[in-house]
Image (cartoon, rainbow, N blue to C red; front, side, top):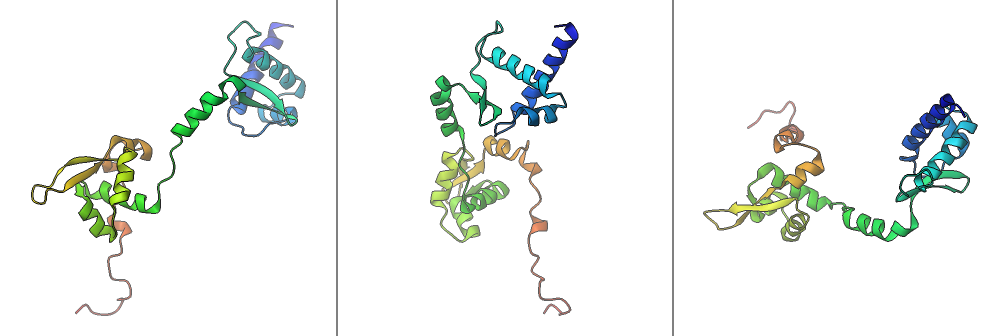
Length: 193
């Protein structure tokens, strides 16, 4: 094996890794060859090299994942001994989706903060106690003070909301006024009395 062949296999292996990291179904050697623009023989050799590397046969550590042939194709999998660890992590990290009521309540708090539950309830015209508790438990809103006149707890959003929205500050929220009906629908051509 010459240095040129070694470099070519290493280059094909790197490109294969990039593809194999994103696939969710096993890929045949032919499909992988087409994806990385290499001959099937080079892909077969690169796959064998990756399998040996991940298994620690190439002198490095045995990895927590493996490249496995399943159903006529190749895909990366978590090693069996780490299934419980990964399962626990995924189950505790996977956020569940917010209900429509929670999203509406969160929007009111984000745009009107600091705001009390009563104020949110009057805007939404429904009781929001349980929804606010859910948002508090998820760390999306927090208590930010108390209304001096009524003694009601005031709520605001947290940095966790900014992270989830992918913004740096609430100033990056879209302006709400262009989304609201100005109340003139159905009054075209009629004079306002």
